[in-house]
Length: 160
Image 1: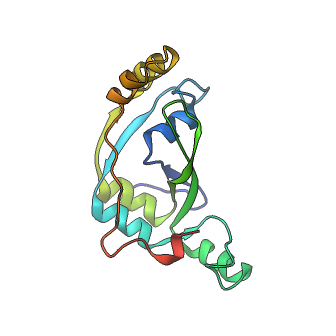
Image 2: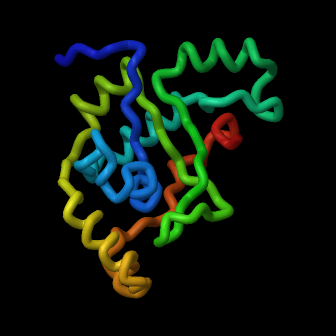
């Protein structure tokens, strides 16, 4: 069993290009390594099913107090940030960021983890193609990403 900081968050960022934006192609200080972490579908769906939006939305929440209470009790939180294109420019749709804490972190480490692969070299190779203006070459190297729909669909409470 691992000891987990109850107030700390571990973030899952499923979008490769959003992660490249966030980490500066894995060159920002303290972010020099990018790991591709594979977890089970059941684990990811559990996290989504037990998540709360990280920001208050009046069309989703009964009120700010209700949202704060839900957020306090949720072992996961969902944040939606602009997706990025191959040059890391914002796109008109959102990429999911999934924050895990407490029970969700324990499950992540002890039950859901399938594999961990260092993709720092891939990040640098894609960046080299981007710098050269080689869109086709950059796209060729990008990991395949598919639209993910949890079994039963995305809970309405997570669509901000």
